[in-house]
Image 1 (cartoon, rainbow, N blue to C red):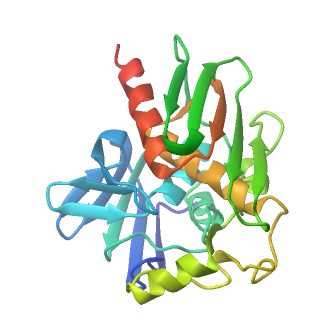
Image 2: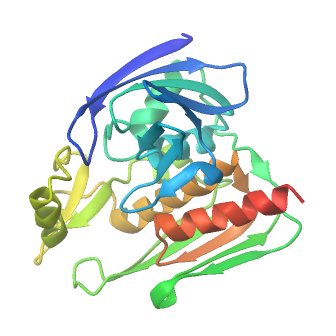
Length: 264
């Protein structure tokens, strides 16, 4: 087991080179250190949820933290120092295996999430029927339903029951995804420069541009994002969690409600 590991890659949106150095920490929290200062993963530090989760503290700003957060949450990592060179975390495999493999080298092997006990349910609603319900339960589970107007993804569901299935096997491989017209628009706007068919599922009019890792990969990636965004609280609610048409914005709203309930 090592106490430090260095990862190189590119940011999904900027395409800029990104290097991170992960170190086991003694101070609780997932701390990301940049040239402009340090910021700790927390719903309170989220400043933007457009296409990814962005956190900030003073002049320190870090984009695309959700995949790292998901891996840390699944493994119960509660103290980690992350030194970042670049504007956003590297996209890696477009999912969370990239981070889980690195954390395994640091000795985080067992999937033992930090479970958050809540005294009552939390429900948040968004536009167009979007909804997240968090219902305290002795056997936690997460269920996600996505709905898109296209014929390829359409309505799709994904489910993860921590006690029955490994996050590494079921959820972590699911890559970020986008529709061809969105990808073209992003590239025209100077974004999405780090995306490839290896780290991103591209949805065409007639099907997927490449092979899927699992039949429900788009919905499962939404579930991965949900774990990452809720995990900003330092763990996962011990609950049955149901999310319909979730987004980073709605996920973070729910995470803030969880944090507020924890502090009561």
